[in-house]
Image 1 (cartoon, rainbow, N blue to C red):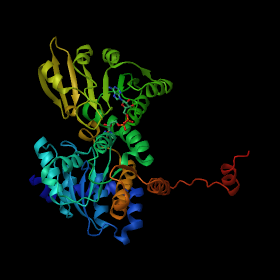
Image 2 (cartoon, protein in one colour):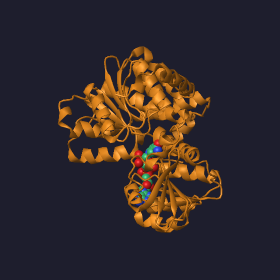
Image 3 (cartoon, protein in one colour):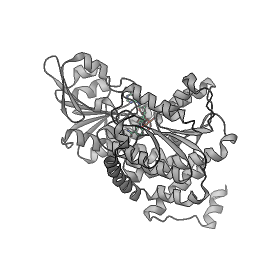
Image 4 (cartoon, rainbow, N blue to C red):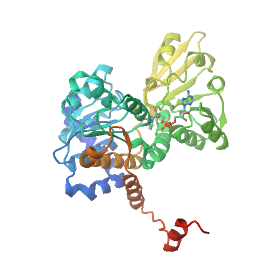
Length: 415
Ligand SMILES: NC(=O)c1ccc[n+]([C@@H]2O[C@H](COP(=O)([O-])OP(=O)(O)OC[C@H]3O[C@@H](n4cnc5c(N)ncnc54)[C@H](O)[C@@H]3O)[C@@H](O)[C@H]2O)c1
């Protein structure tokens, strides 16, 4: 356990960050307000493995307001905001998170939330669900159900589902419209650029900015980089998405070609070694590399380590690798999720949507897990819709309702 978690000064700082996020997440706080009197999580233990940010503190305190006892670990060793961890600990949350954990400390923190015997697990990346299923210490845990926040976690869980060994139903929060359309695109789009800017303080305009993937995250990053005046190049393996990128006006190149011309590279694929040894060899002097995908496997940092003749930390979150011949390559945040390592993660307004889905899915599991299949289930459509409605309400945006005549028209096969 890190002593910072019990630091009252840090907790006070954390409270300010919590309040800032709280004020800017009305979609979530309204959702909590609508059900708080029913205390739908009374007596339930909820194990949470999410990035410990100011936005997460609003979700966690919300779960407590609904009656839950919460155990919290971080979804990445470098993403924790220590002031938030300290604040939540001061509020009675069982916190096992601090910034800069070793891999072993990170894994042990996940075990610690499981030792709390949670009824429900909210996960991001599925390391917690994997630990439940892999480690004998947890073979007797009786879990009502869980959720998964991100694309990579859902892919892992679908693979587990195929083995027939999934022990409880999962709700795939990432697959809600009110999650991936907003969090993955606008949240990661803005916060990844934020991370690159905070880490490097370099100009984006006029740079050749390579985005590896045109998924939801890739689209958001490409859109925001273009907005800052970059010449954006997209790399893809999916022909539909490559075509879409091209028709959206981006240059599309294979990574072997993009590597020769790019100035800034961002990976966001969920895949392994997308930028690797042969690409480092082709790159220009002074390029910047960052990753926005969930795991630190998209940039082959091991190869960079082997190729270097010198390595120096030149700014906070920027390592300079000098290769044979003197070429320099700058890597942000050790190749880990740059928007959370070098910035603060997604803005609160967008996390209000994702975390409304998390919160309502936890309540749904508490009430309906017995009726659900042990597989990756979609967020119930009614919840997804409710999150959209709550968010529009919070933004003061009104929309139309179809007239009776229109309803009849759309239900009839006659024109
Ligand atoms: N940084 C964050 O805060 C954040 C937020 C949301 C999601 N994520 C993570 O970002 C990653 C992408 O998520 P998404 O929702 O965009 O997924 P997605 O499935 O919508 O898109 C992934 C894209 O990557 C492409 N791809 C796969 N291999 C590739 C390769 N070798 N080269 C180029 N493109 C390749 C796929 O064809 C696909 O279009 C996942 O790891 C996800 O967990 C991170």
